[in-house]
Length: 430
Image (cartoon, rainbow, N blue to C red; front, side, top):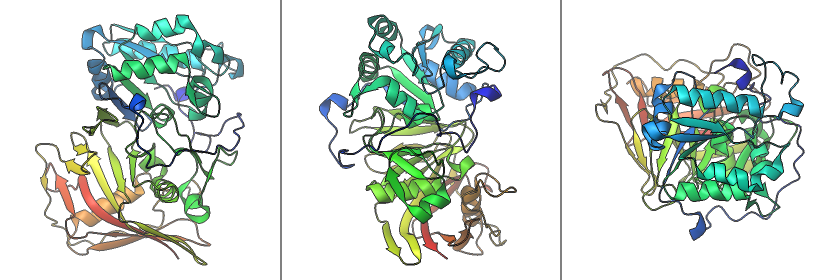
C-alpha cells in the first residue's frame, strides 16, 4: 500500500469533524433485532496495514465474492474528500476518497476480481448515499471493501439522524450481506462493522488511568466510544484494530469493562478475522494472515476503582493465528490442523518488559509487546507468571500474565509458541 494511504498512530482517529456526545444507546446485551440478523454472508475484517501483496486476504475476499466473476464495490468514505486534500491533483501524493478508491479498485483487479469499482461516497457527497443510481451500482456488486481512515466519516456518510437509520446505500449493502455477499474492511473499515460502543479513539495508558467516555474527542489519547455503534454487522464482541502494533490491548480491556461487554476481537495488522454467518447462532470465525487475532474474554473479569487507580482481575487472553477457528456461540477455539500442544522446553526467565502497551511516548518501544511477553511465558518452564509494566508512571500499571489450569500453547514447529489459549490477565495500578 502506498504510504499516503496509511495514517499515523496519533492521528488515526483524529479528524476535523466535531461529534456531539451520543447518548441513548441500547444496552450491549440487547437481543439482535431480526432485521439485523445476517445469516447468509460473511465478513473479512483486517486490523489495518493490509499489504498490497497479501494474496491470502485479497484472495479470500475475491473467492467469497464469486472468484473469477467477483465484482467488488470499494467504499472509501472514511478518507478525506478531494476538497480537503492539498495533493488531490498529484496521483503520487493524493490521499482522498476518490484517489484511494481508484487505488483499491485497481488492486482488487490485479488480485483477480472480474471488476472493482469505487462507490462515489464521501463527506462532501453525503446525499449520494440516498441516490438511486448509487444504489443500482451497489446492487450490481457481489462484495464490498471499506477502506481505512476515520470511522466517524462512515457514520456521517451512510447513517442518518440520532437513531442511526440506514441510508439507501447502506440498506442495500446490508441486504446484499444477508443474501450471501462478502463485506470486507481494513482499519476504520473493520471498526465500522461494530455493534454498540464502537471505539472512536484512545491510547491504552490514558484509558487505564482515566477510563472511557461516550463521544469523539480532539485529544486522540482519550478513550472514546460511540454508544450506538457502527453498522452492527458484527455484534458478538467489540472490535479493535492495529491492536498489537499500537499496544491497544489495554484500551480494549478498559472499554469492554466500562461498557459491559465480555468479549473483544482485537485485530492485528495485515491479518483478517473471517466471520461466517455473522449474527446467527452458527457464527464462527477463522484467522488468516501473518499475525493473529486476540480474543479478550471478560466473562469472569472483575474491575475495581480505588484511590490508587483502576484494576482488572481474571480477564483471559487467547491469541489465534492463521488457520485457527473460533466458535463465537460456545467460546471455543479450534486450532488449525497441524498445530500441536507446546511442551515448554526453555528454562530462560521471561525478559523484563517496561512498555507492555507499546507507548507512543516511548521512542525505543517495540510493537506486539504484550504478545511477545505472553509467548515467552508460554515457552518457558521456569515460571508460570510474568509481570510487565506501562512505560508511563504516576500512576503506572502492572500487567500480570499467568498460565492457569487449562492454559494451552500450540506450535507448528515444535519450539515456537504461536497460538495461545486462555492466558490469565490481571491489571493493577503501581
